[in-house]
Image (tube, rainbow, N blue to C red; front, side, top):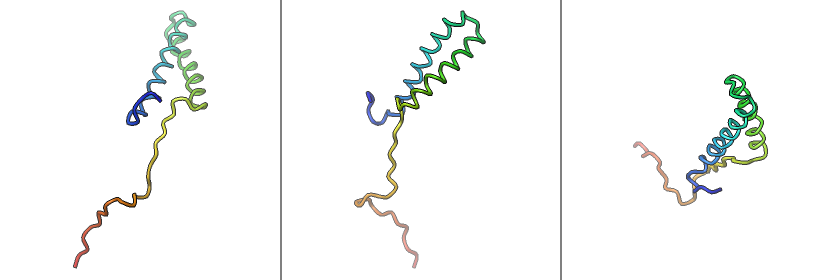
Length: 82
């Protein structure tokens, strides 16, 4: 992880952008500038590459949630009516 903790969500986005750039570069070379074939090849290559990266755990976002309050948390109970 090369980003501060508050920007962990940005790492998979940057990874996906880099993958899309490389995939589009490769597919544009393969399809010789035919727009439909380029879009189709980009989609196929992106699905294969990004799917494998996601499967093997690169660029995953891990969020921890605390379900119970801490022992020193203030109690914000509403006032009891009399």
